[in-house]
Image 1 (cartoon, rainbow, N blue to C red):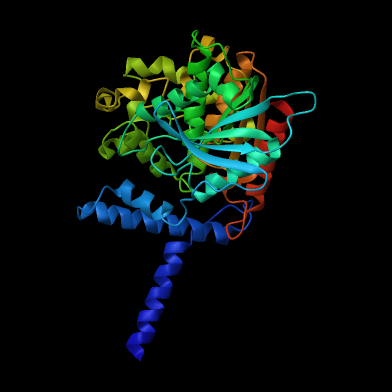
Image 2: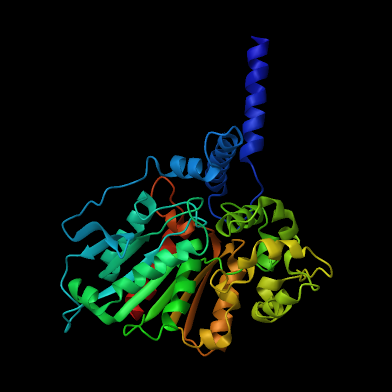
Length: 410
């Protein structure tokens, strides 16, 4: 009996230690977020164990665990037709509202949506994204094209970007738009997290493609990840161990995406990969000078981290670190000036807060009309948590604010 009691006490103590992490008071329902984060970490640890013993790649296991119970077939409803198809070799899920066109018009609006998940997780068929795209399609009264791009570790940069670009460019063909009764002057491209990265990069490519006769009207980026040159911005320092994505996890996602070794992660934690003795990175770091791009309320007392002598081997082995297609934030001003009206959503408790904020500022300086919505009680990925049992008020408000902007501007 004593042994059982001791075992239960040990298990309870371990569980409390594993689950508990100090969270800011401005977050709503911190215990629910702790439980969700602990569940995600547990799945990560199990996938790492499976990888270690040689069963499968850890990302294959993690994707299987996260999607096994949540992959949905395309189910239509009375007012929404949902179908899976292929655009020039890329799988997509299409949400088409069975409603009357806008007053005075005969054509529909359209949104190209790109899911998040660190370029390695998630799916257009996942319950979370299926639900979100249904809501967007119905509330905006627009066709939503959700792209099922290939994932790490099956492919790496730039293949995810190529998939999205190919599918988007195919959809923008006049004959395809006509097939879906889409107004060529009312098309948006949007995405969240890593999907926001792909949306921003593809939008830069599309606006620079002189062969296209159709241009997107809007881009909408939800807590996007936009650069990997500085992992010590104020939001990275402030939210180092914040759920749902910590700084170290974000760096590993980047290295997996760019097919780099995790051995470089610790060098990147302290910005050794973009030190002052690496000439290729000095000019690029100037384009994300957060001392001038962030408001004082974000900078607080945090200091920039510049290493005098660093690790050039990181850049030599992972040259995509300097590729603007991977880091849309470091694009030339001339490329930014071609971009459409933009919406950027950021959350206070998110390592990526400053990526989106700096991009909004750079776009404004380039003369682009930008709406930047910032949520003080928001956390990374919160928009997907807007329904029971993972309901957060921040999730519902970010989703509704985003949809309201699309409805009013598309």
